[in-house]
Length: 168
Image (cartoon, rainbow, N blue to C red; front, top):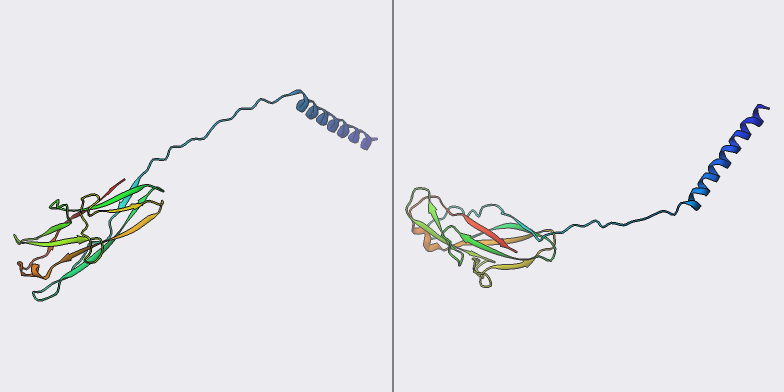
């Protein structure tokens, strides 16, 4: 008798649940709406300078010396950009002057896009480098050359600060 009561209660519950669900799906006409998820992505670029260009210790009679440094530019996909190099003397052709720590002399150098090739300055369309971003870091290399004729200057350690500019 107890089993019969339990089975009857369970059957009644199942029938009630099934009937309720069926009634809801037939009686309720659900209302719907939609919405968008939006974002605006702006074009952008970042530049990360590489290591300093160290040209070592030079002596009269040595040959011209060239060194290089790789740096990265990361721009959003399909973003065109132009890279300019500006020595501290603001020369537009990439011809810089290194100052000594105590000497009044200046050591001249030139920046290039490849070894002994096109100067790298900041005259757009003349001596800058153009590229297009792909969303990843793109590596570029700048070269600096000091001619042997500069080795006559007063012995000292010479340096200059070059600014990399990326226009996009």
